[in-house]
Amino acid sequence: MRKEEILKALSMVEDPDLKKDLVTLGMIENLKIDGLQVQFDLVLTTPACPMKDTMVNACKTAILYTVNKDADVHVNATHRVVQQERATDVLKGVKHVIAVASGKGGVGKSTLSASLALGLSHTGAKVGLLDADIYGPSIPTLFNVHAAPEMKEIDGRNIMIPIESHGIKLLSIGFMTAPGQAVVWRGPMISSAFRQFINDVDWGDLDYLIVDLPPGTGDVQISLSQLAPLTGVVIVTTPQQMATSDAARAIDMFQLDAIAKPIIGVVENMSFFTPVDAPDKKYRLFGEGGGKALAEKNELPFLGELPFQMELGNAADTGKWDFSQEHMKPYLDVAKEIARQISVMQA
Image (cartoon, rainbow, N blue to C red; front, side, top):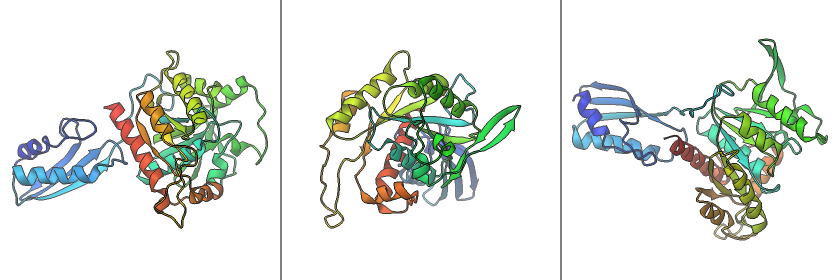
């Protein structure tokens, strides 16, 4: 068997999202042939690729059917998150900055931000989480972390070192205040604090930095759009019209010419409740289909429904997250879908 034959066979396998063949996309690396043994790396664009197993099997099938039916094919599925093109050195070690936004409070935006960071980390990505909700920081509670970040002098500047928990780098204004202490700041102070969180923090090398935005369309959202190389925005809503109406305003803000940031899609939170003693039932407590209708109206991807469940509430209150549990599967699925959408956007 020759290398050219193997590559020709693999050029018949297409990435289902990127709509190009694996060889053209440069996803085949370290190809080695030894007699009937063939091995190579399949380098995916996201650790959360939902089609990984399908693509591995397609590679093996292509070689067995078009090159040699007796070949012993070994495919090592790995990943390399591709950094977006950018015109700034801000957050240069971070490949993708994802903002999580909502039009109003109380829709589970911070819980989604935490579960998104944890879900991406669970798939093997390097992740950071910035709590930019200055007035209502939730990350200290969500991760049960209440220590102040370490400061380090680098090139004459005082740089903050994020706190690590569950393998994720965390930063929040809540780490610098006493629990329950109110942050009473005017707009310029908020913008200044957020600028520090972006410019004066050693985030290191990350695949994804999740930014938990405050609700609404104010100073932090504008500052983020101006300062950070934003890959895109995830919009969070509940099904009810009050929430979707406010979420529509958030979408409109990020689509303004002065801001113009890509929107990755819409997540509907608290979509339904399933009692433990009736696992086949879904009670739509806040209405039905509002998030999907919002996505369709704005021609955006609908990233999925998330249930209203007691187990997640307990995890959020105690900081004890376990993605091996069945109740976390919907959150892992949404994290994977967001990573997939980013890969498609970058193609």
